[in-house]
Image (cartoon, rainbow, N blue to C red):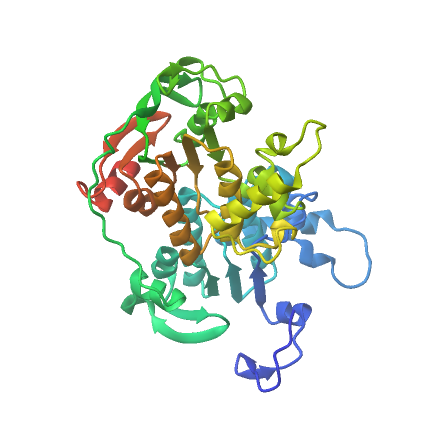
Length: 442
């Protein structure tokens, strides 16, 4: 896609190549699986896998060949997808498999995976890493681009670290640790120590009693106090997000009771939850947390826009600007111009914009569902610091994540969910991270 500057060299199979094009790279066995996967959502699984058949002169479509090529590619890596399903109708994890099968159909010998796990759950990540190791056993070379250090160390033979466009070095993975890698990547030292913290001796913000929703979760009991960070973790399908949506008024429970500040809360919509001081940061910020084509300023103010108007219903520029400025400064959002589209920001800064949007309502309870998905380690640390500061101000926080270190190192307590039920409560520092992992995977 890009030509190197003079002096740069690319050598494949011992032969120096120049002026590579995507078509030439494909012919030489190089395939890239992009972060956005670059699939055709309106075409079927089989059509996407076999898309390389359609190069060259125009000719009639050979549907039998498309089906055969797709079937052979799936068998080659041992996956079973329904070939006639539209890609738009399958999960992100299944789309990843389609992209890998497409590379296999093109006889790939070198596969470059660009942030392949950024949108996957932990269960899906484990499956993808196992498949990656299987490709390696079959003689396929992998370049795995990622900022998730545990995944890199799990599958890599060697690790090359880059920072600000400069290669810092290449190291044997077995001689590396996540701490060393984090320091090399960011130039900063990160503290991974965990000290047991007692729950704040403050009033209860939310009290959940016997909450149930058929097919999602059953008989849930817990409470969260002012200034407390409660972690909730569990495997895919454990009911974590469904519970969060009920607490935010978007999926009312069938039975049970939610009390906010001691009063029974009847929430028929998310508007009722917002009026009670409950904010919810979705796990899918791009689709549910932000309006990507609108400005940073518009995204920050959208939760309180009705409070920024005068009697005539027109926006007061002074209130609008002060709300935007306060959000940017409080969350240290790196934004050159608040009128820029929010999609121009990095993942970490986009997440801070979502937080700023909700902090504008002055919440009593902040529910964070997978708050650092798609965010690099340095930006993650910044978000954790923001969350700790919000808790110190007295905001109650529920942090939902399938990344066990995330809840272990950044919560006062951790609840484990499995198959819609709470199965355990742990206090980080009074239990080990491995004990929490065992409880989640039991």
